Amino acid sequence: MQGCGYTCHYCHNPETIRLCVDCGDCIPGCPAGALKLQDGKMSWDQAVCIDCDACIAVCKHFSSPKVRLMTAEMVMDELSDALPFLTGLTTSGGECTIYDAFLCELFTLAKGAGKHTLVDTNGQRLFSDMPELLALMDGASLDVKTIDPAEHLTLTGAPVDRVLTNLDLLAKAGKLYEVRTVIVPERLDNHRTIREVAQRIAAYPDVRYKLIRFRPYGVRGEWQSTSEPRDELMEELAAIARACGVGVVELV
Image 1 (cartoon, rainbow, N blue to C red):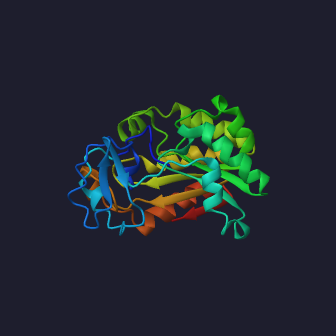
Image 2 (image 1 turned 135 degrees about the vertical axis):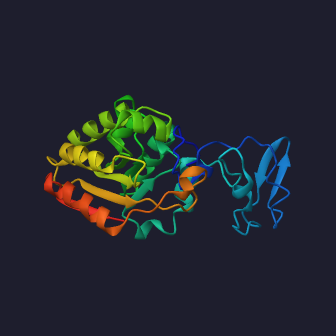
């Protein structure tokens, strides 16, 4: 889903951060003629689009014109052919929880179809403020980018408090499917984050900890030149998590 309250320096999908401002700057560069302004609003013809992403490359607003407005019923209808083969739905973004009312509608329909429901979230909104969504979802994949308050504020533009509150709330509610941390050498205190997050989730053996290698794909700005973590660092951090009592540690 389009839109996010964070502006992460290492965002791999920066075109999902903001909604389109209808400036039209991307129109001249579209080789397929899939974009145009209609009554001051951007229009995207999905049938004509060749998915070259030229529009995303030129956007200065961290957005994309390649979006559609859909109801929950429209989403389920579009999934109808695949639904018999799916165990459930996972919603992501951007940050999907900024549309919590929509998620409640979608998850109600998914539950009616006998499907599991998961949210892929950075924890920027408190689940305690979204009790209906918390009740409807079966679990969450939660990003903990860094546990250090100063690092988190610099990296995302937002404090870390809500993320950690959500971590504890979801774990205690039995709704924490996995925690994920992107490993960024030199720029973040990865060792501290892995150790302290692992200590928080060790009491919940069903919770996985996924350690994700930083990769520069899609990243804009100075963080684009950041080195990827070596295998040795990834294994060292995984060993720390296991030593703290985490049962399942996955390297990606």
